[in-house]
Length: 87
Length: 425
Image (cartoon, rainbow over all chains, first blue to last red; front, side, top):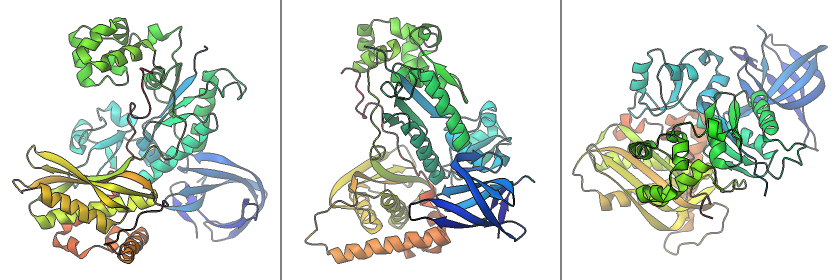
């Protein structure tokens, strides 16, 4: 299940690690409990989200035809994935 | 020879900025990162700009900060996060040059003289702008950068305008900007040096630069020449090449206890507590060390430090605490209650290094202690500090309740002069 802290929503993420070391998120579970498939990963770069409050690798992905930014936060307390919520 | 291009990058209110990134609610209120309010050793480590505007200063006791600004919000430090952000920033610097010299967690010098052209620009300001915008975008915090031809002036530049600013101190403008600033703005002019300079009518950096170095030598000794060279921009110290192993010279931890320590049991508890945290941090950083030291301060003015070299380098809490306890017994006569205790391990080497076995101490026993330590660390990481404590700690929970690991989790900046810096060369 997703965990929300302010505008930061930690999501359960299924990730594929290729034998060449490429990391690709495959799907996420959003707050509504539904699983959303990531159909494409457009690019990945370092970035911070001031709104959500965190920094790490930002995956620009297509989910349900829409572009989303999925953050991988490799923090000392545990590596987690989060989304910035609009609401 | 052409001038060097040296950048000094300083993360603005570093600890506070990292906290504010992670918790947006802290951005619009006065806040300060500092120790525990209940245990009486709390001081302000960093404050945000709103708190600073209200008179909160680094180094203030928390109660003083509260008096200066009654709405100030205190946040306990999260050193693991600061180390992570410090590394991320350093990774960015290292994309521009291999000559990156950290000065504490939040500051670094970069020498881009040789790499600038390779990067498609001969201009330090250009690279400073790139670095500044990348830090903002990728880390969500801001830096102030100084650009000049020597380390001292670039450091001045990064302090000159804050936050999120870039200042160039060039051959054209240094007389107008830097020389007009008070001498206390120069690296290594502390409060006492400044007071002394002031007495001789040396108020600005320009005054200092124009003063005969021989005169300064008479007043300050050798450091007089250094100050003179610093002020005139003649510092030729190289920016040390980046080396991961440099910043940590010793691992130590000290604490002012919630109540005065009055007997051996009290002291043993605190020594064990501190030794556990020191051992855990040694292991985290993959070090062993063979010089064990303690520092003791009583409730009056008396304080001392003692250290000894041990036969086998260690990162085991049982051994560190044992040596610390021996040092204490040999050196303290209980003429007064104790207020503050510290344990430090230095003369470090990587824990992967082969080591000399001791004939009289069985390796199996050491191995057991080490495994016990590892298990305890693992349990604490999962279930919290209090989940497993030594029996000794139950003598007084107010003392043992201190989470020593969270306290003073510092990598001490290597002093400017130790780091191969020598202006006479």
